[in-house]
Length: 103
Image (tube, rainbow, N blue to C red; front, side):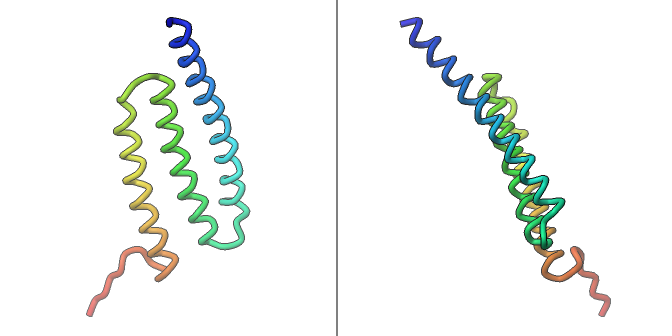
């Protein structure tokens, strides 16, 4: 029975390490898209995808470290990512982030 628990632990550890490597490669490709992207919306989508990958990395680190303390970090990254997405969308639509109408 003990060998089943050890095998499961090793399998989870190996899977999380493989996922971390794949996400790191994905972040490298997304950085290329941010730098080389043909249009600004492409860059914005790549930036959002990097934020999602950072959330995934924090989640995988929480699994690997067997802790729940990183859940707050994941939520914080999500909130900041949402605010950043709204700001980028507003900038791409209107050209400014904060409208100052002095009527």
